[in-house]
Length: 173
Image 1 (cartoon, rainbow, N blue to C red):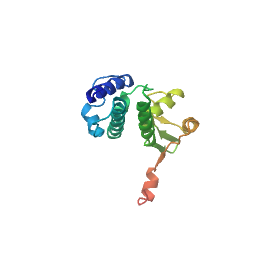
Image 2: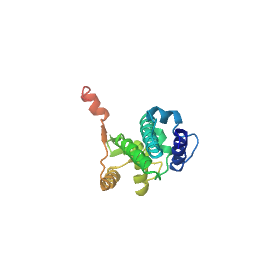
Image 3: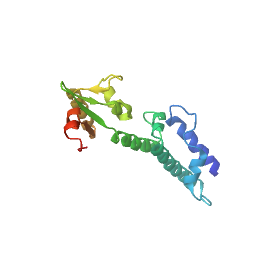
Image 4: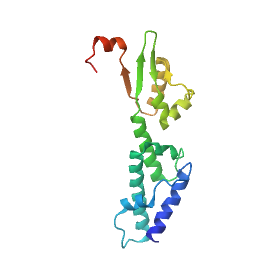
């Protein structure tokens, strides 16, 4: 098996992992850049090296272009693609900020970033939260935190200071 055949084989194997096959997820040049020297390798080792280079290129692409995550199906059939995508989705979730907004009447939590992440959409969908709803009250936030605790994740919470707090203590950040 030649290098070109191995590259095409990896490209074809990536198609079932994507919702739409066009444009290609990885260009051959991106895989070749991560490949290194492959002279004298037998077919099995060559294929393994090409897959490893594709995995490295995919990891790099997902770190530099997070929106690429939206192109993947929920459960990619290739194990190495599923592992890379799961890692990227968890990283996306760890970067989510939930902003607590206090007012005179009640506390509200802005979950728009959470609803934009893959796992956030999954959990909010299971809890039957509307797609349009972006602010929840304290009881609903406790339900969301409990659901994430069930999958052993904690959500970061950012507190937005009220206007009065900003006025009386402007130096504090």
